[in-house]
Length: 315
Image (cartoon, rainbow, N blue to C red; front, side, top):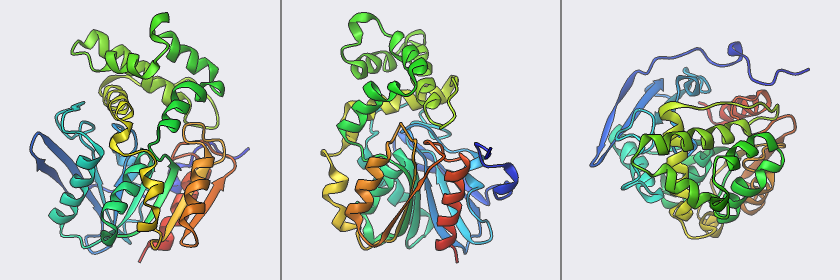
């Protein structure tokens, strides 16, 4: 049987950043780091969530001899501060942060690499600044629509009923008519005894549904809070975009090369969305559906497909 996850030896060695810092954006201080070669092909890693943050393992996807990789924690998560902050935290703010980071680092244009919510933000940034984008490597496509959010809240659990039972069972009977608003109310409470258990239940549900090989997974602590609170914040606000904004503006980026990697059994971001995006994009986009994978970056088939896609953009 094939390995479920990519093996350590198949990733690039752990590389310490050659530079890191915080970008002053007023209320928000945005943590960023740079790895690889300063004169390499610039690539921006855009994490998911919203609110998931970056990790050292993400650096290992990028060939340090070829890429100048920039990673950053979006507003309210990871090492960016203030943690879990919803004020001044919109898609437009994040797009502006990316552009400010590009200018700060003196990068003319770059490759965008993002999965799940990272694919949403990569696409939104590319639409806003197509002249600053050399191409895109995308995974587990999420377009930020209400239909996708409703799938996550009401339908995804059909494939992971044990996780869904815990997710929905956390709410009182009278709260289950509007799952999103009920969780949002709890997650935005100023009392830790209210928001933290809700955050851990939300984040654990999502993480338990993220791989082909099922298993109940527990997410706790700060990472659970930023992930759950910011996802609910964005979902309540339709991801701060007009409905179907990305597809309505696909012509703006249709000239850019894109590799779209999608797990066949991704129940968080079902493959129909990736197919729809690739079909609208046209000849400049390639779609690879990985049969033995779900949503996770580091499932073996997904990770190998991402590494192969990056090779095509490497110098």
